[in-house]
Structures are given as C-alpha cells and as structure tokens.
Length: 423
Ligand SMILES: [Zn+2]
Image (cartoon, rainbow, N blue to C red; front, side, top):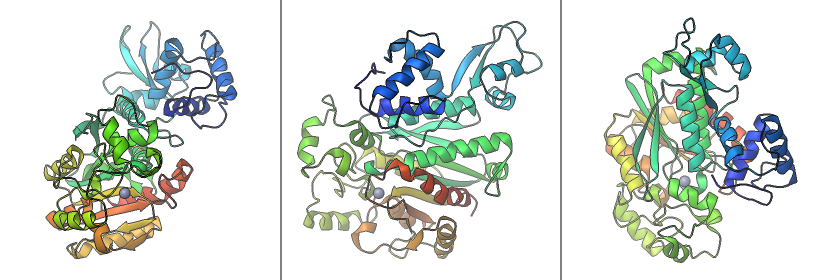
C-alpha cells in the first residue's frame, strides 16, 4: 500500500475511511479524499494504538490497520488463555472463534498455538468503490473466518488478475451467479460478496435468512459465484488509466468519446464487450455492430474478433461447461429488470421461475428484442443448455450507479439469490 496523507485521493483512501468509521472513528464523508477530518481520525487511531500520531498512514500504521481491513488477526496462545478471554479482548464472540478454528479444542488450548481471531465487525464494506484489491482482501478475510468456504480461480483476465470463484454448499443442485461483465456495473460485485458473507454467517450460526433454511440449502445445493468477471475494466474505471498499463496508448485511442473512462468504459482492457463475446448469434451481432459503428475496440458493444476471444468470457464459458448448472444468474446494472429468454429457446419453466424472481425482487420480468440479446452470457447458456438463465439488471439511474443505492439493491435481491439456489 502507498503512503496516505492529507491530500491523498483514491479508492484506498476510501477503504481506510470506511474502516475507521466502522470501528468508531469519524473520518468525515467516505469519499476517497484525505481531508482534515480523516487526518484527525487517523491521529486518534494512532494514539489509541501506541503509534506516532502524525496523521500519515505509512507502513507502521498500515500494519495495524491491515488485520482490521482483513477482519481477523492471528493470535498466539499464552499461558492461562481461554477462548472467553480472547473473545473479550478482541470484542468478538466465542462462536466466531470456534467457527474460524475448527481444529482447535477450546478445552485444551496449547501454549504457542496460533489461532485466527475474527473481529466483531463484518468483512464486506458496501459503502465504498469496490475494487479488485478490496474483493481479494475480503475473500481472504471471509475464508479465514469461514474455513468451510471453497475458493478457487475460474481463470485469469487479460492483465493476469484472477477470476476468483467462491463455492457455497455441497449439494447436487448446482447453480452459478456471476457479476460485473461490464466495468461500470461493479456495484454487482459487493452485492454478491455481501450475499456470500451473510450466507456464510447464517450457515455457521445455523440461522435462517428471510425464512430460508441456510443449512438446508447447503446440503441440497451448491452455489458457485464469480463476483467480478471483468477485473481489468473495473480497475480502469475506479483507479484510472495507469501509465504502466500495457494497453495505455491503445486505450486512449479506443476511448474516442471525449469522456473519462470512469463514465463510459464497459469493456475489458482490450476494448471488447464481454457480454457480446459469447457464441450465441455472435456472427449476426458482429455484422449489426459494424453497421452501428461498433466494429472495433471501444468502450462498449464491440464483440471481439471471434466468440470467446477474450480470456474472461472463455473462462466463464469453460467454467460453465465444466459444471452442470441447473440455472445461472448474470448480474448487471441498471433498470430493475429481469431478462429470461433468448430466441424463444428458454424452457417453459424459465418463465415461471422468472415470475417468482420478479415477485420477490419487485423487478419487471421482460424479454429482450433486437441485438441487446445477442452474444451475451445468459443467451449462450440458454441456447446451449436449454435451461433457465437470467440477466438481472439491478438498480435505477445512469451507470455507474452511486453506491448509495446499495442497500436497496441488496434488499431487492437477497431473496432472489436464495430462491435461485433451490427453485
Ligand atoms: Zn451490463
């Protein structure tokens, strides 16, 4: 992490502000701008933690902040320790300790043994610009807290970032949810990440969510989630174009809109619209796209040189081929709409299930007409598998949606996400 101080700006500043607010400090608005209030909060945090109170986040202060960002610390058992005392000291609960350390016997703690201590706070922040780095740190934090989670990689992006998947459950009914094919639609990433956190917590504690028995779902179904299909594009819109980006010159040419990447860029880092890069009427779409001026790399709608030309879409298609998904959800923003069909190929139950999704979310159920529904992920899934596949457009407004819409979006979609795993 770079050194942060008064005047610094960026997604990393925002993340630290969100953390300080979460643990009881007042950094001012969580806006990614390191101003006077943030500086004062850092000074107070430093005083409380025996650090030099200079208001600058350098390596020493960061080393104290990092476990809090991850949501857990590693603790070495001392003579006379009990889980109860450790829980008190860290403002956490004995149950959280036991969940995170399934191989530790609470009655027989061994001196020198290292255990994971989850803090009492949640891991996934839903009030910040949600970057790839944030997601990876949150996944690490969740995996430490909930060691029953399976985490893996479905492939790599053009720039080598992992297309990380998280697996919930062990049942035979496999479903697949993915988010953020489109860069500006990154709000779908914290949506899926928060769902993973809440689902894991409920599974560990044996509680229900909205009347759904989570341990029952765990045994009946397996939910695979790739929260971020397009990490390179999201990095571009949230962190800006870095001079060491290997596509630096091309990207400046490809973005011929006169507007910043943060307002227009939906594609991957090679200017390919990943949700027009699947093999479902791809040739037809390509011709139409050329006529409409989308025949070359750009911010949106360019379908690439051939179907699955991009490592991201290829990885998602391969991941799908390597499993046996009964149903898929592809999360996008915006419109509060659920699309359920492709060329009338969807099976009869797809509309019935779509109506249930519409009921629990309040979103409109719709069919796409024209080229919007060519060469997308759900189009390809419906065409190749004749099983239920949905594009869900969350939220309302202009992309990127403000993160202030998050709570409404989560509330609209939580039951849908549960229902889709057992319907
Ligand atoms: Zn989209």
